Length: 76
Image 1 (cartoon, rainbow, N blue to C red):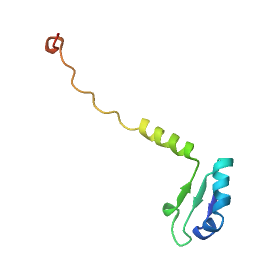
Image 2: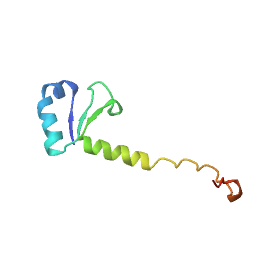
Image 3: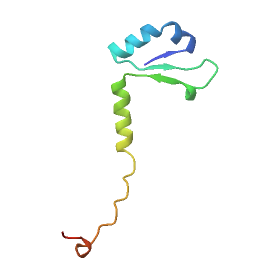
Image 4: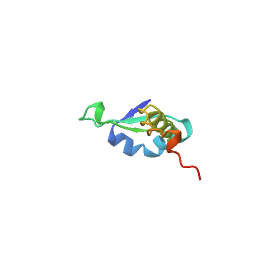
C-alpha cells in the first residue's frame, strides 16, 4: 500500500489511477498536518463493493415478523 500527501497525489494522479486500475493497488492519501484517521483511501471499485457487501453481511439480522398461526391464515 502506497502513501501520498495530498500535494503528491495531485501531482501523480494519472499514475495513481493507473496503479489502482491496472495493478489493483490501494493508495492512502494522508494530510501532512493531520493524523492517519483523516486519510483518504483510493482502491479498485471491485474491492470497495466487496467491502460493502461484507459490511452488510456482518450487520445484525433484522427481526423476523411474528408468524401467524394456521387458524389466522385466510384460505381463499
